[in-house]
Amino acid sequence: MDIKGRIHSVETMGTVDGPGIRYVIFMQGCPLRCIYCHNRDSWDPRGGREITVDELVEDINKYLVFIKGSGGGVTATGGEPLMQPEFVRELFIKVRAMGLNTAVDTSGFIDIDRAEKLLEVTDLVLLSIKHVVEERHREITGVGTRKIISFLNYLREIGKPVWIRYLIIPGYTDDPEDLNRLALMLRDYDNIELVDILPYHDMGAYKWEELGYDYPLKGVAVPTKQDMERAKAVFRRYGLPMG
Image (cartoon, rainbow, N blue to C red; front, side, top):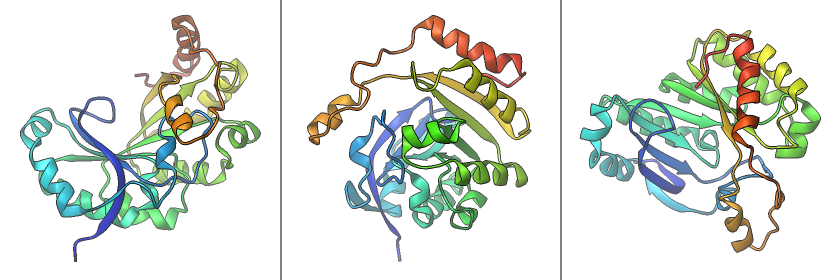
């Protein structure tokens, strides 16, 4: 039986969610409640649309020559792809057979036993760390850090390649002391291939408003180039591989 899943949308020629050109699948459902989320409409696991693995594979085949020629592959993002591990695993098995790289873009907020089998067929994990301080993490996402740190430790244990993503939000995630704490922690993980420090943007604010919610970060400025360079300099001092 062809496994069914729920997706929010797809991007057919992505270039920032892993190596090469990517077919990016935005999965439906997320356990986090990030105050800056640009896919607010992906939170509800009952939303989006139902689709089968074979239907996705058929669509991926349309772009195969471009994806494969670039050394790219398929990325499952969200929402939170680890909420549908069986579906993503079946998809990854099939696209790997097509010679494509597989990547999961995740918050890491998952019980390890639910992710193990999916990680066996995942070539790369893009791990989005929201904050290094427990209280601030809860303020920003609604959840704690324990599961996320356990997930990161498990990725190191199995030697899974990881790209770290960290978002700079002025007044929330840019404190130099916190950045130093995060960089110091990440230095202990020899499976981290890249640390990507990204600027906050408010381009998803309209989705909150369309759903009838106030955007929590209304009025928060995007970081300047100088803000970004200061943040990146912290991670460079610790010898981390920077994007």
